[in-house]
Length: 388
Image 1 (cartoon, rainbow, N blue to C red):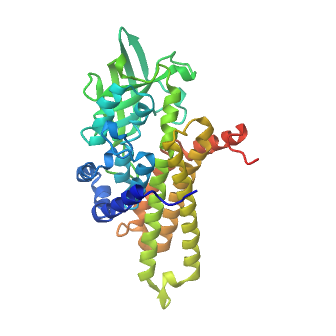
Image 2 (image 1 turned 45 degrees about the vertical axis):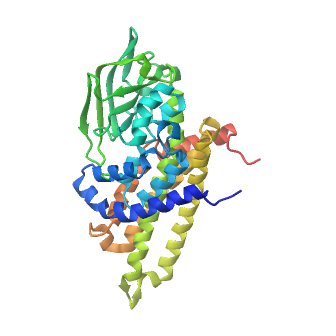
Image 3 (image 1 turned 180 degrees about the vertical axis):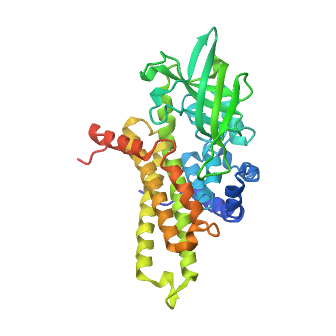
């Protein structure tokens, strides 16, 4: 068992760490306040090959896998969770295509995302169907060789920037809750009937639009069906494989927040010493540092598993643990970091309030903490996670 990174991944980590310090960190506050898409950072990610990290080489990527993308996102998220979300969106919508798409679909849609020629977004949630995926009302009805899709998706990250969408819709009866009643489709932004509705006024992770995708009788060719008709399982497999990537945003944020607070405390005088000199402060730092390292081990293992194709049901507890623990830790650490700065931490003069606002999103997106707990518990009850 070797806990060190292979040389190529260690080099990737060092490269992105330098890039994040020099190019992302100075932009983080401005991105949040302006709430405008940071095209300059997207161009930087394209130029440095980061948009193709998780894409195989034969499709125009670098083949670094989910582990490589996890490492990169961790480094970026130390300074900007909005920027890390841009990288996450290179895998979330392309995941189902990489898992079950045809070779033609992969070359036509995944390759342009890897090269930065196109962007994509993922549509699963609806106003009445968030965690309850089977409650979705978007319908896809066969019409000759095509499918006609009508409905709306919400809370889609990158919805305005996307050139195409991976959208799941009901292909069975409207009230069906059978898993074979949902199917994945590739919907191009340019198709008649596709429009972007309202964008959300978010508490944090500002700069990358989140909002509605409206589908009004959109005619999609049968060639754009992802996998088989009745692909609910594909949606879950795609999300399962994403757990370590979302977790990486959590550990990166936690690391960034704690480092910021420690640097401040080492300079801030109090009672004739610095705040960092007090044992109570040091013990809290030690506690959080240990938890960050525990989250890192869970996350790296999950990324390693996902790259091995271990994201089917029996592996879910381990993947969900990473997402649950790392994102809840991000909330905890950002809260403690803000407290460490006292009144200053609550002000926009410091990054702690930004870390605090951004952290909460992570416990909600791509499966809430409560969903993850249910998945972990289900694994224990079935014996997929057992110690005997």
